[in-house]
Length: 115
Image (cartoon, rainbow, N blue to C red; front, side, top):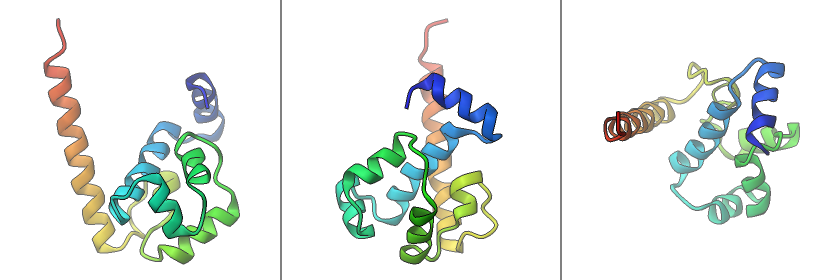
């Protein structure tokens, strides 16, 4: 999905599509740290299908239900909207840890940019 398309979706749907895509990738890392192929296998889907989600294709209701079934401590509210209230303690801790690492990396990159 193109960046322009993502911007349109963000405005139309009222949520941050880029943040949603980051959370999809983060979910994969939190659950298993595996590549898309192994994570897809764990869920019982093809790597292509998971890759499509990480690239911005819409998540079907069936896929959301599959995630709830296979990853019961994960919250679809977090995945869709970033709300952490329904995440398990383990997942909430992992999310905070990964987000902290990501923020530190961004700050470090910005410090090295020329003025």
